[in-house]
Length: 465
Ligand SMILES: Nc1nc2c(ncn2[C@@H]2O[C@H](COP(=O)(O)OP(=O)(O)OP(=O)(O)O)[C@@H](O)[C@H]2O)c(=O)[nH]1
Ligand SMILES: [Mg+2]
Image 1 (cartoon, rainbow, N blue to C red):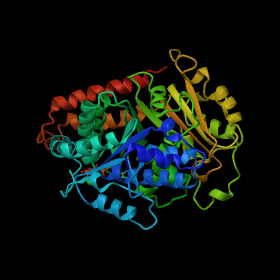
Image 2 (cartoon, rainbow, N blue to C red):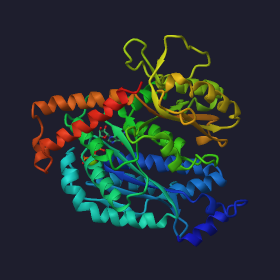
Image 3 (cartoon, rainbow, N blue to C red):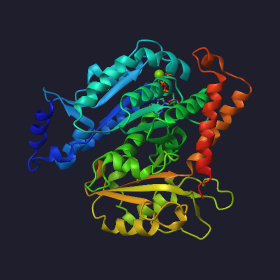
Image 4 (spheres, rainbow, N blue to C red):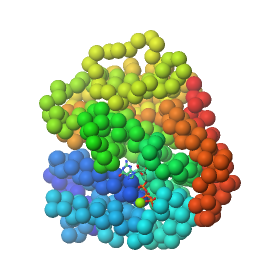
């Protein structure tokens, strides 16, 4: 569909003439490897469900952001899918061809080699598969960029632990940056379970973050351990599987990036600049609530906004004595009674953005002022007024009475990175498992450089006081 057709389509929605011209802001999503492709499919499915709940300004804005409409009226995700094996893509295709799927991927944007993956080898992905696939991927990317009237951001979805998402993904993000030096680049990176997976996942994570760091504007970090606990504790999924984690990832990303009430600060690139005011601090985590098991959702009494906001603040708690994180409050359901006491300490923040979705949020604005903007949460150098933003939409997100998401750039991230870097360093000092990397041109000096970069990130976050 060309620009004019899209204007006609968008303006055909009753009561919304010229809407398109006001709100044309698109996001291009690049899905890499198993994790990137599976989470991407969950994300587009969630957004399409959220959209189909109404035929409104919100829906058309969201459609324009994430999808394009083809001349045959089919709804196509603004996405490019990349993998070095067929298995996952074949599964994803099966799902999207299901009779009830109202959206599709563009077949021309699926770049899946029939090899057997990279065997969790970042260097193979980065040094061999990336260069091999680069032109095909960039060809699809260029076409998708041209199809966006205004491209607001490119969102890369990948896990840091495998070899395709991490290696091909970081190679392609660098290639994208070379070609589009001024476009906003955002990575949603899934960190592996801390135990029980492959030994070299720590090397892969180290190399991924270090390589993406300079060329990216912002990272949203997800941790499989954390998502798993949320799924077990809050959603009561005893046998949690990856797709349960992906549901949570999709809800979190969707709640941040679905349309918001228009204001100077609600455009995606404004959200990103607010959250990453300094190039030394680019890592965001998304806290959200409430999360209920599907079957009890409709029976839960609606919570007050102030309860949800207080709950978000509690997720930033650290222990008073040694500044270690406490049991993460995101694993608990929001409580109506206040359990604040003087011994509580919070992880210092560089910036926060609270997004509330649902009706009657005039009181939430008041509460934000009181609780998420307090001096105790920020170092002195963060100016008042740029600490905690608040954006809202009255529309119910995914049909929930109220939903809240706190995008937070705070010191807690250094614990996760530190544990990965420590494990990687231990393996590295024994010169263990280096051969698969040197074979594809990643030498000890490259590791040392990556360690230095990540240690610097850890130090910056650790020293926020
Ligand atoms: N949350 C989540 N994590 C996933 C998913 N699939 C894989 N992972 C995690 O991702 C890591 C493995 O990376 P994959 O994405 O499978 O690897 P890949 O990018 O396909 O690379 P290779 O298969 O090694 O070429 C492990 O830490 C898995 O726990 C998923 O669908 N959701
Ligand atoms: Mg794979």
